[in-house]
Length: 171
Image (cartoon, rainbow, N blue to C red; front, side, top):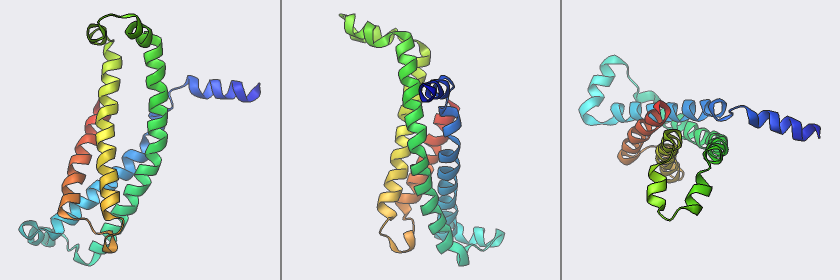
C-alpha cells in the first residue's frame, strides 16, 4: 500500500520536465564538440579557428568526449522518453481520444479535431525522435572508428541533431 501510494504520488507530478535536463546537456555538449572539431579540421575554417585558439593538440580528446557525451545523452534519454510517453498517454486518456477514434466512422475528421495540446505533444515527440535518431546514427558510425573521430557526415548530422533538439525544446 505504501509503495502504491508512493508511485501514485510520483506519477501525479510531471516527471518528464525533470528527466530532460541530462539528455539535453549531454547531447548539446556532444553536438557542440563535433561542431568545434569540424571547424578546427575543415581547411576553409581551420586557419580562422587557430587564430582564436589552436584546438589541434586537443582534437582527439574533443572527439572522445563528444562520443562519450553522445552515449550519456542516449542513455539518459531513455528516462526522458519513458516519462514523456507516460505523460502523453495521460494526456490522450484525459482527452478520451482513443474512445473517440474507435467510435468514429471518419477517423481523419476525428484526428483533426484533436486538442492542440495533443497535437503539439505529438509534434514534440516526433521532433525528439528525429533528434535521437541523429544521436544513434553518430554513436553507431563512430563506435568502431579510430579514436571515435567524427566524419564530415557526423558533423552534419550533429548540426541537424542540435536543430531538432532545440526545436523540440522550444515546443
